[in-house]
Length: 394
Ligand SMILES: [Zn+2]
Image (cartoon, rainbow, N blue to C red; front, side, top):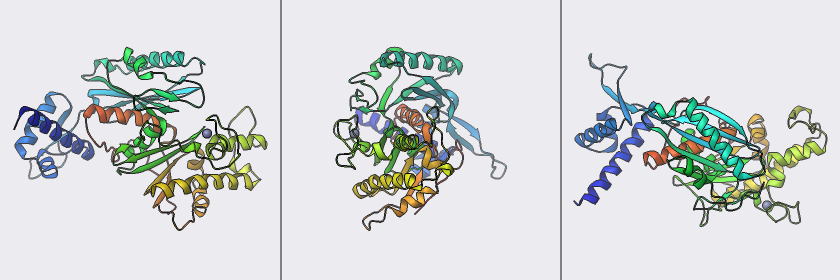
């Protein structure tokens, strides 16, 4: 065996061991050997190495077998930190998590300057403050990565190509962050990070679809554990699927795009026009909406897009990330009634319980995955969130 092969196999074994330790939370060497098929001496030498690196730690099992408590291995979660950012206007989220993706705090930063570069500088300053507050530099590993979600199109070179809200064309946010932080910076579209968070924290499936419906609509696609981006990074711009010929004018240049009818923003626009939302606030009470046709029409439009997505992708689970739909999950029943094509094949439609934090959590998760060099990160057994309300309608 050449040295290159040996290095490759060592890295491969390390990856497999890390994936298993993370997934099982705590596990013995013998169990690791049994699950991975690696022999005990390989497991032992790899584990020793990872303990020297302070990646994993030992602890005695709470259960004893004949007086002897087996030693279990677990991740050294407090050894360092990751940051996930949902970069948006007028507000940006900065999420800090430990090395097991456990969310520690989520900070909001006002980013409403018309000059995007000023907003970027402001977020960078705030990240520095967060690092100080959590004494990140005192931990053995410090900050290990930053994952940033952008509400727009990010090409495969991490350049922002288009954002519907403001003209940020070809801004290299990655470079701006790299000037300040000597760690890997990952930039992606918010829908992509959102679906990744769903996989890591709730649904450990290889193929997953998540639709975010706030100001616009984006589709995040995971295919075989990878974010599906298309040839240039433009895949999943489902909000700009045309559902009305000669419909409303969209900022993308076309008319009648789906997000102008089925996003939360679209619903609120209608409710404002009909006087159900006072202009100073964005809140409304569903029970106060006497005109049922508003919600019926909204669900009709939502169903048009969902029908198309389901017919194209044949998904097992579709996750709808919408505050409105999550709060009013009974509407999923009406929505499902509209998906009555015999060609429609899916098993479940659920609403996201990660909600608006999904994107920044996805940033945390993608940074961790890259830091550990693993293929799949499964934190679904960790009790970080309230039990997922699946609200299945199938
Ligand atoms: Zn459009």
